[in-house]
Length: 158
Image (cartoon, rainbow, N blue to C red; front, side, top):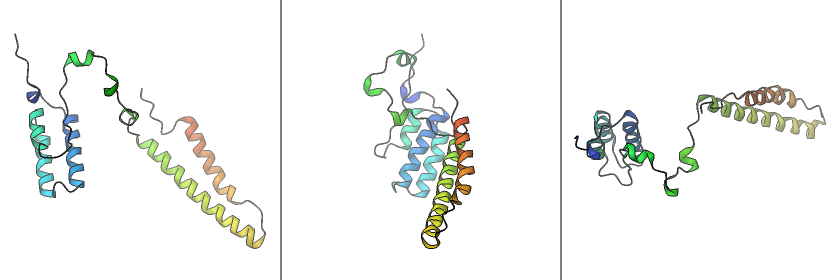
């Protein structure tokens, strides 16, 4: 019969290493680590083989959560209300398409607003009422609406 492997001796994945590397990056940004120490610890993280190795790298940092090794029996358990993911945790990071659509919409809004303000100034000073700014905002806005309707930038993975 095999002996159970202690949690600190279990192997880590690249995702676990990436999580701890992100925690080190945050600690460096907060000023808890200088550049040399950050570099040294990051190298240790990517060389780590077990959860114990990862724990050593962040042992002196406050509020650092280590990846917790799981067992198959834990997967079968129903999550308690406190352990269910919140909306922020459950939200998937947005892909490149969503970012492009967000930037394009912001650029459209800014350009349309600038043109509208110029048009409004001309209307009040010269009395020319022709709404030429619509020729700038309309076609570009129609393309954006079509993109949103077609799902461009939407994460279609289930």
